Image (cartoon, rainbow, N blue to C red):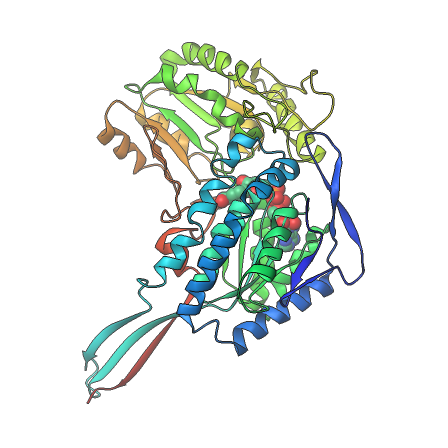
Length: 486
Ligand code: NAD
C-alpha cells in the first residue's frame, strides 16, 4: 500500500535529503507507512520543471493532446479505484460509505472527464467585430482566453483526492502546468496519482508535479516563487489569509476555497420533523466538510420539539471503525484536530450553551481520534461555537422569530460557503435564498455538487469558484488583440 515517491519533472523520486515521514491511520493510530519529506529545494525543482513544461512544450497550445491525456488519465485511475478506496479510508479515516460519494466515486466519474470534454466547446476566442468608435480608423478586435501558466496547488486532508481532482481537471484542460502540495496527514492518494501519471499516461514531464512534505511551510515556495503564476488553495481561512498575503509580493492571483459555518434553515412551513431527524448528517466523515450545515435554525415556537428530534438523531449516528460499511462517522484526522474540536466543545459549555448529547471522547473507542456526536442547545449566534468552523461532529440549534430574523442570523457570519433551506413553498425558499450571502444553497434537499456546478464562497469563505464554466475561466488569462480592418 502507498507509494512514498514524489513526482518531479516526470520522474518518481525520493526527497533530495532522503528523509521520510510517517503516514498514520487516525482510526487505529498505527503507522501505515512512509512518504518522502520534500524540502523547499525539492519544491523549487518541481516549480522549475512546471515552468519549463509550460514555456517550452506544446502543452499550453495543443488542445487535442490535452483532451486525450486527460481522458487517458481518467481511464488509468479507474483501474486504481479499489486501491484508492482502501487507501483513503486508511489515511483519511473516512468511512468507506463516503468513498462511494464525494470522497472518491463522484470525482472519479467526472472531475477529469467534464473539463476534458469542455475543451471542445469552451469559448477560447470571441470576436468583438469591427468598429471605429474613436474615429481613428476601423479596427477589428478579438478576445482570446489563454492558460495562466504555472499553478501552485495546495490542498487539505479532509477530501484530499476530490479536491486535487477538481483542481487538476480544469487546470490541465485550460493548458496550465502545476505543482501539487498535498496535506501532510494524507499524502498517499496524491503519490498514487503521481505514479499513475508517470507510468500510465502521455502527460509530458513537468506538466504535473507532486511534492509531499511534513512541514506546512514548504508550500510557501508556491506562494512566493516568481516562477509560479497563480495559487489554487483549499484549506482553512487562517491559512488562506497567509497565502493571499504571501502571494501579494509577486501579485499572483489566488483562488481560495476556505472554511464555512453554513445554516440548515427550516422555514415555518418546512418539514421540521424530517429536517431535525437528519441532524446526524453533520457527523458524516466526523464533520470534516467545509460545506456542512452546522447551524440548524428553526422557528422559536418549535425549538424544544426540534432539539428533542435532533437529540435522537445524533444519538443514532453510527460511529467507529471507518472500514465498517454501516459507519458514517470515523475519527478526526489527527490528535491535533481531536483536541481542537474538544476545545470548541469546552468553549460552548463555558459560554453557557447546553450540551444536549455527546460532548467528549467516546469511552468505547480507546484508540483513534474520535469525538462523540455532539448537540448544543441554548445557543446564541454570537457564541464561538456558532461563529467559528469546528470541523467536528458538532451541531448547534438556534431559534429565530420570523423570516427576517432568520436571514439576519444566517448572514451574521464571516463565512458564506453553503447552506440548506427547507420550505413547503419552493418560491418562498428561493426568495429567502436570494438574500443569504453564500456560494451554494440546497433547497428542499437539492444536490448542488457536480463538475458542471460552480462551488466556492462569499465573504471569508473564499475567492473564486471551483468547477463549472467559472472553474475553467479562473485558470485562464484574457488577451485582447486588434488589427486595422481592411
Ligand atoms: P490548513 O489551512 O491547515 O492546510 C491546508 C494546506 O495548506 C495543507 O496542505 C497545509 O500543509 C498547507 N499550508 C499550511 N500553511 C501554509 C503556508 N503558510 N503556506 C502554504 N501552504 C500552507 O487546512 P486543513 O486543516 O488541512 O483543512 C481544513 C480546512 O480546509 C477547513 O477550514 C475547511 O473548511 C477547509 N476546506 C475548504 C473547502 C472549500 O472548498 N471551501 C474544502 C475542503 C476543506
